[in-house]
Amino acid sequence: MEYLYIGAGIVLLLIINRFILAPIRRLAINTMMGLFLLHLVNTYGSLAGLHHVNVTPLTGLIVGFFGVPGVVAVTLFYLVI
Image (tube, rainbow, N blue to C red; front, side):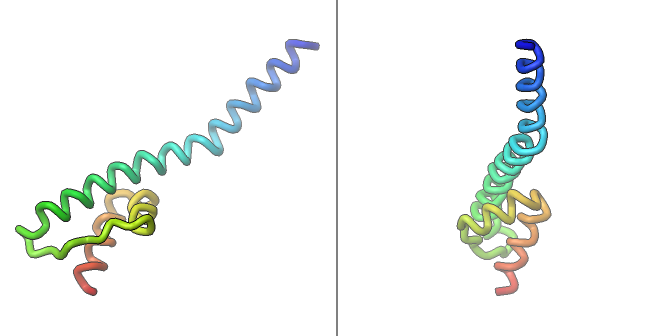
């Protein structure tokens, strides 16, 4: 009976990892990569005529959710405005 509870606990931890922690981990990694790309756009974008992109929590979430296309979208948004 004890092994049944241990097995159920392991299965529950695997389910939590798969459906909750893995997407959060992926969002955090995408956010870090996107913020690094935004830093590169801010640093070297003036050479290409791009404006300064404000790094806010909203732009961080957009970049984290969409990845590299989010960086392009945020940069184009600030270029138009």
